Amino acid sequence: MSTRLCDLALCFQGVIPSVVATCDAAGEPNITYVSQVYYLDEQHVALSCQFFNKTKRNILENPQATVVVYDPLSFDAWRLVVRFLREEKSGPLFDSMALRIEVIASHTGMSGVFRLISADVFEVIALEPLPGFKSAAPAPPSAVPPQPAGPLTELRGLQKVSERIARAGDLESLLGGTLETLDELFHFSHSMVLVAESEGERLVAIASHGYGEAGIGAEVALGEGLIGTVARRRRMLRLAGVGAELRYGRAIRGRVQECEGAARLAPEIPLPGLPDAQAQLVLPLIARDALVGVLAVESRDPLCFDEWDEAFLQIVAHQIATGIERMSAAGEESEQPAQAPLARPRQPRTALAPRCFVYYKNDDCIFVDGEYLVRNVPAKILWKLLGQHRDAGRSEFSNRELRLDPKLGLPPLKDNLESRLILLRKRLVEKCPDVRLVPTGRGRFTLELDAEPALVERESA
Amino acid sequence: MQPQLDPQLTEFFESGVSLLVGTRDARLLAENTRAMGLRVEPGGREITLLLPVATAERTLANLRDNGRVAVCTSRAEDHRSVQVKGAVIEIRAAMASERAIVERYRKLIAASWGFLGMPTNLTFELSCWPCHAVKLGIESIFEQTPGPGAGAPLRRPGAPASS
Image (cartoon, rainbow over all chains, first blue to last red; front, side, top):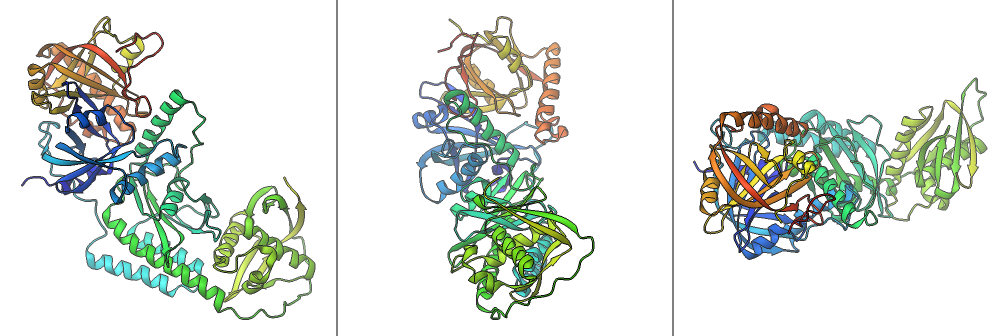
């Protein structure tokens, strides 16, 4: 049976770079690696063009080329004879190919420097295994990596994830429970959810799985790196062979530095989670046509994710987005009216450990015992709570009174207060576990202290 | 003046980098194969490629037809790449004594690709012997590292400019 182009899905993931050979009109051959070979349909592929180079000049003069692609699991090689049809500089194909390059450019500090010029569309004239490339006979193209059993199991798994989302009583259990279930049932062992701040310029990680507490509170600017780019473009992105992509980006960065100096280059941005991640799948969370956050999963296996994961997590992402929206609306609408604050007499305490909280006014940032804790609205909230506890002995608080406090700077609509409290709670667990915010009912919580906090305000560091 | 590979480039070419070989047929359709070894000849103006017989049928036919050849050398770890172009001087069966070049190359490239995650046993499954030995005269040398300037004639301190 002859090989079909769609059988070569693994070859097109870019884990092993493909090679393209062309020839100019005068008969001079040229050969080089190509960054992306993109499957369009059974008769067509697209090659990425980031620079107007010799390959591009050659195909404009002489539209035929051969491309060799490699299966990253078996190392079998496949030869495609292709004929150049057209270049696309906008549209869905261009956007899909450009997104991947935009992300790598962002992580390697080359946003705006390294970008897709065109998606060059080729007709595939012939496709054959490269004879003799391996000493043994070529194996059939690798099957898609094992999926989690059959469709019924997948549906049941999805049902369980969906159930966790539907039953969650608060945002923290919704996100934490979902990520945990995704690992239990589908082995997505490293995942995180970042929510969009209402100001729309940043995303903040408020739930993660597989990283311990590290990473909670991590901020990503919109448009920056893999997660920020997915958020800004509102398009899902799957990257395989991340290490190879970054090496490619760094090679170009090195050449830009040599040829043009470093003035146009920004610092590199570290990967969001695992420093040695080889596969990333990042999905925007959209509810009512608004970005509410990003779901990101990653793996050290470069071929961990495929079309199935994309489709499956897309469904989960929609549910998470709707869940976040639901929690946010519920938080704002169904709180009990604030009761009169309960002033509790201070209890004499014995030998509580001292904790020094310093609030820097210039950037709304709190350090505890000299270590960064939290900033922005969560920092203002904590400062209010600690201050009221010190001055009035209060320990019971409501979300509503926070919403009504103009000093906290919460926007009147979509204030993300629940997300901010989750972030604050988790940062305290990580950095200062003897100060806790404990939910006591819908929209209410207690400040618990096993430490003696000293509060210091400074204008700047 | 015919360009030549200086000692640094010679070392790079012989260091176990990927060896992509491009040729073309009479209808100007390019062909695409890999060499499994390379020797820079004394003087740096000629190189000898070792092309596995199992994979080089079309390439050999092209070389016998018109002799034009491009060789892209690329280091997997950082994509540092240089391309030479030229014409065939000689095609012959590789000698038994040249097998050591192939064996050395295979170990080096397996280590290089292994660094990137390719299992060594897979690299060792590639056909590598017997080989054709193809000597070519270098006519031009180009920078090929991806980025601005890729495809431009290579100019480096101490290296002769190429056209």
